[in-house]
Length: 208
Picture 1 (cartoon, rainbow, N blue to C red):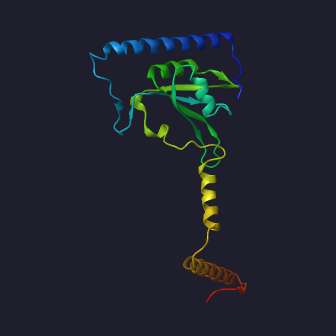
Picture 2 (cartoon, helix red, strand yellow; picture 1 turned 45 degrees about the horizontal axis):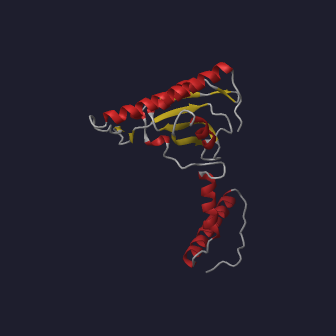
Picture 3 (spheres, rainbow, N blue to C red; picture 1 turned 30 degrees about the vertical axis):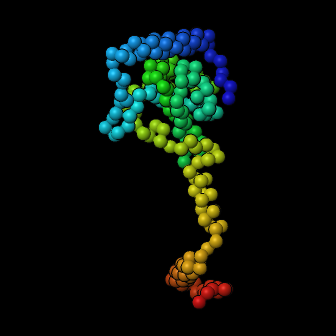
């Protein structure tokens, strides 16, 4: 998907933000080497729900159609390393619902990305981005399978049901299905009879 060009002021602001992020990461890496002997390594933030994280997550809304997982990852990697991407999709159709989440390796990078991309014009839509710190993250952001328009719950359940219907039926299940069908037909006959319609369905090849 091609991204529309924005005004030069926005482009220059974006390039400055990317440069600042790279400088922050560079300083952080140098500082980590010096403090390695003096300090213990930082532990991941653990919430009451048991979720641990040391990454930065950005919520992104008003996502234009066509800006999916691969495109988002490629675009936001200009800020820094992207570890996970999720576009929230409909269970019925598998299509994008217009929002998602991006996880960065460094929280500082996520902060800059969220600040820079908020209200950024992309394909006629103003993106809304919010930084989510580690202490406010939970399993739900990236717990779902990577669905697509060709792979989503509704079609998977449909394929499972088709496979079940086309599979060989055992003799026990066959007789169960026949008895259930006979009960349904009898109930229909009684319903018609109560409406003044007397009819008897003739069934062929019904096992005794």
